[in-house]
Length: 164
Image (cartoon, rainbow, N blue to C red):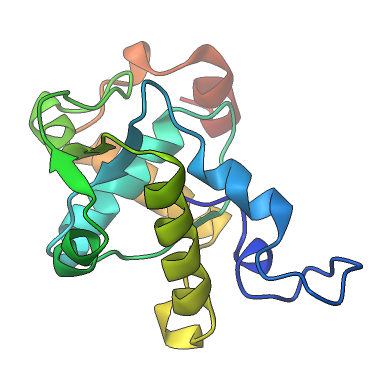
């Protein structure tokens, strides 16, 4: 998930004639222990699972912006993927959480390559993915109806926001 497409597509202005990537965009690549959290998504349902997992970690329902990365592109950047750590999303079916991945052993260069790759992806509107707040809410409601979410385990603020 990224905080917004405008940070990556060049539309957010930086008052420099030589700027390349908006400095604010780099915040989307915040790592912990040289790892960046991502989700494995081969199908639309996998993407929906990731959206729901990310939404459950928020205090309110809001839009989600994201890019789809290809493993072969990550391989070209020498970025490794690990499936050792299961994702975290209070109240979500544990089977869905196994789709969580980490990009690991990230350093200055790998993050730079990834930032460059995301900037290139953002140039083509067909690569940009945005799930509106209403679409996120519909997914959350659907997953609740399908018993993939246990409402009592969801964050209080989000549960209140959803009137669960």
